[in-house]
Length: 302
Ligand code: C5P
Image 1 (cartoon, rainbow, N blue to C red):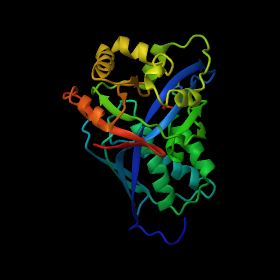
Image 2: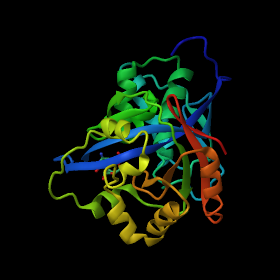
Image 3: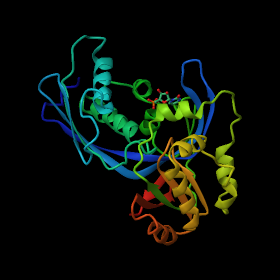
């Protein structure tokens, strides 16, 4: 570790959420994972992570804003810090100073918005910085992938096409002229369960999602049935409330609506922020946010 860092060093990192603009589960792989075809767009809805170096080699986690998340060693934030520390210290055998982590949770959990992976990526970036940046971006990417399939995306940022487990990323800085309403009904969908329930027995072809998005730019309604989320059918069968929200999103005037990730958050596309705001009044019982596309991602308006 470099010398300029002291045990007083403290760092704050913002961890953004994401949405999936289309999500195709192409095939089950021999390693048990699935090959995906999706576009990730970062969302300016942030968890905040504060990291402070300790004088010993321990790791702690405190969580605000969420009563159900475990703050123990099984939390992805702690796993991320430990795994990176082990990776860096392995060649010399000298352990690095530990880190106290404080996580302020704002991204709904189990909601398909990638909060857990975003937090892990933020811990990796922050811990590497506190320890004097002794790792290459490639190593960070590898460690990230060991923690979760979405983590490499959060290390890169920007709108990106993702293939493989989600780690083969191609940047696509497209700005779409749409406003969004995000609605989360508070249902916690477990991603491993969703993959099992989807039960991809045979391979399915991949759509060119970038081309599709560009073709639907002027008329998002044309994306209906074209830009899909393969999880929707199985997840909505198990949780009919999510299906009802999608229908209500259309009833509220959305030009297009889709689930993000393995759910339960849905997003609807609207012509203007005002339209999305008006529609949000139809979901008083749900967490919701109005946003619009901006260069490099989706900006939450309120
Ligand atoms: O990588 P991550 O921890 O997010 O994955 C959680 C679970 O989701 C994996 O254990 C696996 O069952 C499933 N998964 C998958 N294919 C992917 C990503 C996740 O099968 N590309």
